[in-house]
Image 1 (cartoon, helix red, strand yellow):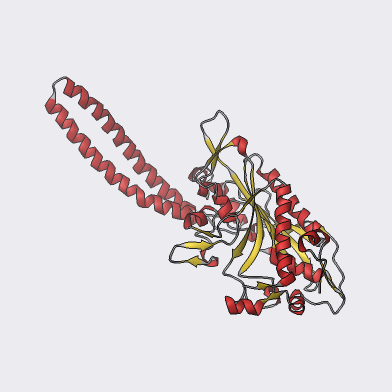
Image 2 (cartoon, rainbow, N blue to C red):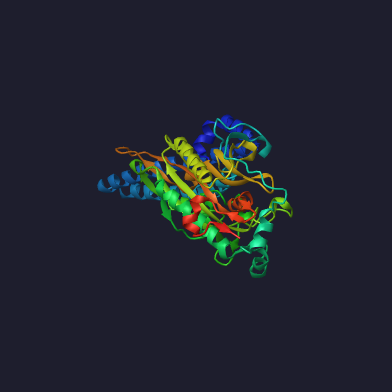
Length: 424
């Protein structure tokens, strides 16, 4: 959430930067500034009346001490009148504050100065590419056929138990899934991330804190009776650990990693691009989250990108890294890098990770601040997160890229975790 001070001081700059995200902010900002002006005017009157009341209260004591009872009583009557006026003005501020907040939360985060304009995925910029794209035989199968042939994931059983988009992992499929989770967690621990096992349902305040609410409530599963939400990513509960917290600067950065199942209602239309593991309602993901000093957060973003690159390299998957254009960025992000791996049988790139710096946008919603040693003033932290990694498309790429006549080869780095080197 943008701060009201920033909106007041840099109106034109905000409008210009949000244009990069193809977001027209003029009308919203004008409403925000009008509401802010009204609030400040009322607050100024309230402050003046409060100062007057305080002065009169001091005078009452002097009058009483000097035996001027009638004058003291008249002064008391004046303070009662001022109290009523202050209450009426304060009551006017409450709905203005609500309207002001509702307008501010409609504004997306400002894109970093390096983010280029654009309308969608076609305008993203390739940063680099790695790995070797395998050349499969003409009889190579897409992962959904490999899954059925080897009986390692049952989509029909998932439909029976729950519905479409909720697969059941079986045998070596379940072991491969668990192996990837443990591999990702172990690699994160080696990189200095503290493992966290958070709840997979959160309250409304947590959804608001990281920007899923009110922007993405249509994509989240909602438990109506308790007003809880199933998490779309571990980013939500892990980042909210630091909601309403003031940290010491020497504690930063705080690095956490978490595995959770993730739930998303929107799963797209029918077609090969969403078939099999390409898009699910429930999926497993390991997430890295950092709470960082503003002066260091972009170095941390580079470090996180390198961490994810190391993971896909160790899995021997061809990959590319894309810097997202303004039109393809999320509501909350200031700068995002996407990772895609090559799906050899589908002959297309599959997104498996987004690594983002949100700067102070989430921190302002979370009220997460830090204080430098010896200073009284607090500042907003920067928050960052990244998928390290999302499993479904990683599994799809592993199955397709490593298929041979004798079976599907397991990447060497995973064999100690799976206990087998071949699915057949």
